[in-house]
Image 1 (cartoon, rainbow, N blue to C red):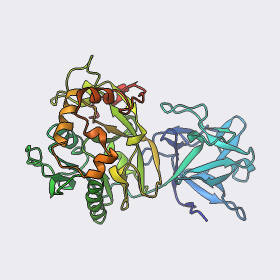
Image 2 (image 1 turned 90 degrees about the vertical axis):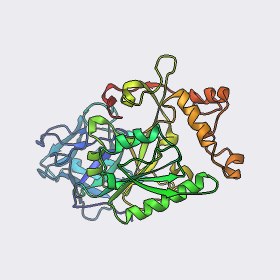
Image 3 (image 1 turned 45 degrees about the horizontal axis):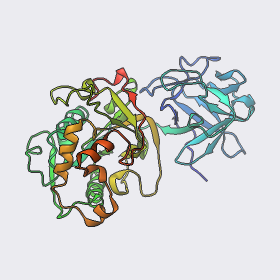
Image 4 (image 1 turned 90 degrees about the horizontal axis):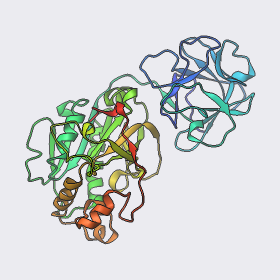
Length: 396
C-alpha cells in the first residue's frame, strides 16, 4: 500500500501551478483558492483524516480551524459539517508521488480548470482527465532552515563562474559553496568566496563529470540537509512572486525536486553583447522552455543521475512548475562560440565524440553554430520564444 501522510500537517501543491491549496481567512462558507506557499500562513496546512473502513478515503481538515474541505456543485468551500458526504475525498496515488483528489459525493476531481498560474483563482471540481491541473503533491511540514550546500564543476569559466557565484552567494555561505575545478588555467578559480576542489581526468566525458559530481553530492548529503548541484551555466530560481531560493529551501520538504527548464536567449540583432557589470536579466528579454533542462538537482537524498544529470537513473520525477532552471548557454552569441572552442581544447572520450553526446558544447563551425543557436537543436527544431516576465528582472 502506498504511504499517505495522515493526521500530520500537509500542504496540497498543484502540479500545474506550483501553488498550494489555500483556505484564505479560514471562515466557513469561504471558497478555497490557490496561493503561493508561505511560512506559517493560516489556511495552507491540512490534515488527512481517514474514513474508517475505506482505503484512500479521507476528510481533509484545515489545521487552524478544523473546518472540512467540502465539494459543492458551485465550487470547493470550507464547512463545519465534517459528517457531510461532500466532505469525503478519495486520495488516489498516481505516478511520481502525485495524487488525484476526488470528491466522493460528486465523483469529480479537485481541479484548477478555470485557473491560471498567475492568479489566486478559486478551486473547482471537474471530471477527471489526467491534466496537471488535477494532480496534487502532498508536502509535509519540516523544520525551517537547515544546513545547505551548492556545488558545480568548471573548466576555464571566467564569464559564467562570476555570474554563478554572484547569484548563489546570496543564499549560501562561502564555506558551503563547492567548486570542482577541472584543470582551469584562466585564473577564474583563484579567488575567494568558495571551496575549490581540484579534479583531473585525462580525457573528458559526460559520464566522468556525472560520476565526480555524484560522488561529491553523496558526500555533502552526509553533512548537509539539502544539496543543490548545478552546471556553471545553470541558475535555479523559484518564480520571484513566491519568494527567493533561500525561502524555497527553507520550506523544501521533498526528497528531491525536478526544475522547470528555460533557456535565456541572446537576440543579437537587438541586444548588445553581455556586459558583466550589469544584471543578466536587465540585458536579456527573451527565453524559451526546454524540457531538456528540467533537471532534478535540489535534493535531501543521495542522487543517482544519468549523464548530464538530466534525469535520475530510476526516472522518477517530482515536478515543481514554480522552480525554474535558467540555462545560460545562449546568454551571448559570440561568447558561446568562444566557450565551445575553449572546451574543445580538452581531450574528449572517443565514444562521446562518436555518439555526439553533448555535441552542443563543441560546435565551432560558425554556420552550424548559428543554426543551432536559434533552434532547439542543430536539426533546426523550432523554439517557442517568450518575453521574460517583468517580475524576473534583477533575479540574476
